[in-house]
Each structure stands twice: as C-alpha cells, then as structure tokens.
Image (cartoon, rainbow, N blue to C red; front, side):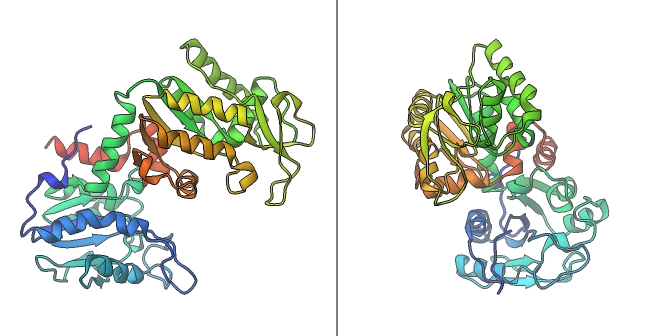
Length: 394
C-alpha cells in the first residue's frame, strides 16, 4: 500500500490543509472530557509549523445538521485545547470554504466543523474543489474516518495539488499492512463483541487468513451454540448458528482452529453484585448467563497468544467492566503484553480494556479507528486511503 507521507515532503512556506480527527467527548458545559484524539493530531501539526508551513486544520465533531453550526457543533473548545498543546494561540475560522481568511507561515488556524458544510457527507465535488484551492498540500491524518467518502476525506484528496498521509494515518497504514499483508506466523485474531451479525464479514475474512481465531462475548456464545453446547439465557444469536458453523468449517478445512471455552463463568444477571460461578461448559444450566471464560480456558488462550507471531485484537472476551467477569480479558491482555509477537488492537471496548489493565505501552500498535480498523481487516478498500494511493501514482 503506497501513499505519499507528510515526512517525505518539503512543507516550508506552503499552505497545508490537515484533515484531523478531533471528535472528542464533551460534558454538558462544553468542556472536553478526554483529549486523546487531539493529542494524537499534534505530531503532524507540529511538524508543519516547525518547518514554516501555514497550517489549516479541520475536523468533524458530533453529528451536526449540514448548513448550520449549532452550539453543540462548534470546535471552539477544541481550538483552545489545541492551542494549549501547541503552546500558541489557535484561531477558529468560521465560513471558511470560500477563503478570505489569512494564515501565515508558522501559524495554525482551526477551520470550523467540516460536517456543518453543505455537501460534506455526500462528497460534493464542487465543495471539494473549493477546499482544495485553499492549500498547496492536503494531509489526511484522520484514520478513524478513512472508511467514509466525504469531501474532506476523499474529494479534496483528488483535487489538491499534493495529497499525502499525515503521521498518524501513515502509522495506521503501516501497522495494519504489517498485520495483514505478510504477517509473522502464527497469526492469531481475537474478535469479541455482542453479535456475530455485526462482525460476520470480518469473521469470514479472518477465517481464510488466520491460524487461530479466538472469539469472545456474545459471539463466543453463538459459536458454542453452533458446536452443540447449551448456553442457558446467555446473549447469543441463534439465527446466526449456521454462519458460525461455516466459519469453523473454513478454519477446520485449513487446519486452523476456533478454540472454544471448556469452562465458563456464569451468573443469573449482569451486574456488579452478581454472583459469579465457574463451571464446565457442559454444566451450563437453563437460567445461566455466560459472562466470561473460565480459568482453564483463559490459560489455553494465553498459551495460544504466547506462541503467536502476529496478534490482531478487536473486542473483549467477557463482561470485563465487572471484576468477577474480567478474568478472561485480563489474562488475555497480560498474555499480549508479555508476547514477543507484533500486536495491533482497535475498537472502543478494546481500548477501554487496554486502559483498564494498563498495557498500552506493551501493545505493538493501538489503532485510533473503530469502523475503519474493522473494514481494513475485512480487506475492504477504504475511500480516503484509496484516494491517497491514487494520488501517489500521479
């Protein structure tokens, strides 16, 4: 996957347009409650500023109505935080599409919420051309939106004089390519979550590629049902049993495996006060809910991870939010942290587990994308990256 990288370009004196992902959570008063995405955008912005570029940054925030900027839509709090992190004021520019604003070399301005512009989500060509005319170099550093073809992620890349990947986007592409194109073997994938139906495509894709496919959560319960086990009142999708069986058949035909739990942790409710019982998977009662894998299964999964060459992780093994059901995810996280394999992790619940078990420094690469991460693993062409690839061939 070949794209131009920001670090390969001379940006001195150039007008640089950076599409970042600054979509951060805020409280009711508009205060930013978590600024990881803003921090992740700093390296590319600082790189351009330090080399004398005139820098314009934009991002989406929330789900605004196109054509208007409501009080919940403005990037004003982001401009303040961005300025604090950069150590210089960052002016917020409204109504920026037609230009008419100034930005000097070494200066950074933040262009108001791009999804407030009519035509942004539909990748309007006229809008994209107007934005492309604002800059000498377009930088896409918003991997989390790479699976969407929008004017600031796809259209502008077609028409800007030069289009490239920012530091964050470049790192994402490199890490995901390393895990999927020619991975060190054995390749182990961990896919957790509530429903097989929402991750069916990725399960099918991985079944053709990986050596071990570890499933967790409600997905694992559906696979247990497909293997003939009783799961009581556990979260599952009986209508997806045939699909789960098909995935296991694909793996088996390749000499690969979907290692299902032999012991589980059950309770009669999902709550912090629920009493957890560790039992054999064959002893699940009619009113039991499977909420984690048991200790024997945890050890087996840890051994699989210990022998991996590459690990791809998306989703927890159990209801790790509650201590009594966190054992499987905790042991798996520890195994990944101690593994010598290259590991890449992505998805909101996965990042929450990484934070809870404090292993961020021990994971090879933590992806900032949710849907984009999954679609990349599925082998889908992501529009924003495809646009950068096309421009790299110019």
